[in-house]
Structure formats: structure tokens, C-alpha cells
Length: 298
Image (cartoon, rainbow, N blue to C red; front, side, top):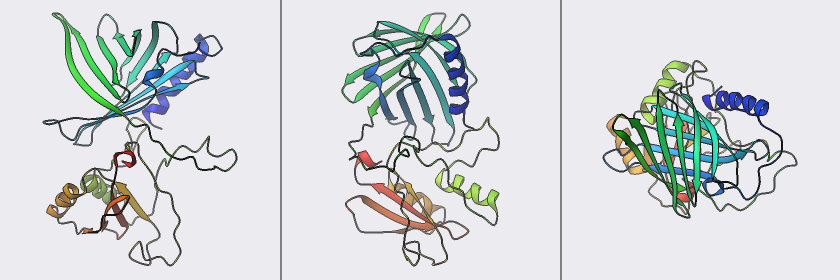
């Protein structure tokens, strides 16, 4: 169970106990924040990636906020919040994160700006969400110190709204299956192989307790496709599956892998959907690296 699941369970119980029933008034003053957002840190912090998701939950009475910040080292900071949905100029909420913080929120809402004051007497901070363009959101954080407010973060997020054509879904299925939650396969030495994926490709090892976080993927396309039983696409005919990882810079990753002695075969052809490379893990499982052709697929 992830921290998001635990936080959602705690907040949901508290909200159902203390909140009246009925949908929030429309239109929502927080609507401009809805959706998924991503920020990539510029130099010298290159490699830091943050994602932010605002979505209506609990019969649209609340906004659920999910935040993730991943460092090049692989360490991840996770946070989650609930804001009371409103059409007014202020609202309240609660914040929890993977550092063990559980803090109240008081927020002021202006035109395309939300300023949240979080914490209490012992620790207090301020976060400002400002929509500067239709798809650009600037998020600035301050902490309260004796001399006043000290800024400690400023990130520029871009909205990840994807214009994807609707595909007919089986009855009563599309509303429930939201993505791939895990990939499980047999191994001669699971610990060693898990370590290889962590050290080579940066894929977090499976959590060993509820307090640990699994690998957090960036939002993007996932292709789910059975192949013919006699396909040669996976390489070895005994290989029953192939994992495809989306990557942001194929050439840079291939260079790093080759420096580490990993044999990588780069396909020289540029396809309409991007570029590809192949390798195998220490137990012979096929791996494909895919650099999407456009930002909407990444």
C-alpha cells in the first residue's frame, strides 16, 4: 500500500465524518488548477522532476492534490492534500507528506491565483499557485522564519493535457482500470535482479514495507499489446515478455549504459512515434527503450 492510498484513506474518513453531503457550488474557483502538471528543474538542478495533479473527488466536494518530486539519485518526496471545493474566495484543507507532516491549510483564492498558508504555531509555510498562461503554472513556496517569509522553492509546471482520441471501452471497465499498477515476473535471483534495475535504469526496487514508496512513473502513454506466439520482436524465442521504458534522452542514457559495460543496440531509424534501443537484463529478459517523438507521448 502506497502513501497516497494511506493518506487518501485517512482524509476520506475524516471528510465523510465532518462534512455535509451535497456537491459544491458551480463553477469552482479552483477549476483552473485541475489536471496533471509537470516541472523539470533547469541547471544546475537538472534531473529533478516534479509532478502535480489536481482532481475533484468525493462527489466533487473536494479537490485531491498529489505532488511528487524525484531527485536524480532516485529518492522521492510525496505529498497529498484535500481542499474543500468552493466557488468563493477562500477555502480550507489538510496536507500530509512522506516526511510525516500532517498540516492544516487556509487558502485565499483570487483570479488564477491560490495562496495557501499551511501549518501552525510551530511550523508555518506558504505556497502560491499562479496560472500565468493556459498551460503554465508557477508554484512558489516559502517558510516562515523570524525575519519573515523565506522562499525555498519556485517551479514552473506545464500542463500535461493530452488530446487523445476516445477508444470504445468494454462495458463497465474503463471507469475502473486506470493504469498498470505493477509488473511481476519470475527470476532466478530476485534481489540481485532488482538491484540491477535500480542501479542501471533507476527503477525503484519493490517496497519491503508500507512505509516505502514504489517506483513513481511520469504521466505518459503506455502501450498494452499481446504479440503473436512466434514473434521475433522480443529477440530470444524463449522470452515471453518485453518491458518498454519511456526515456527522455535516449542518446544520453545509451552513453551512460555503455560506460557501465551494458550492451545496447540502438535502432538507427527514426519512426513516426520516436526512437528505440534494445538490451537485455542479466537474466536475458528483453528491454526496449523508447524516446517518444513528441512531448505529448512522454
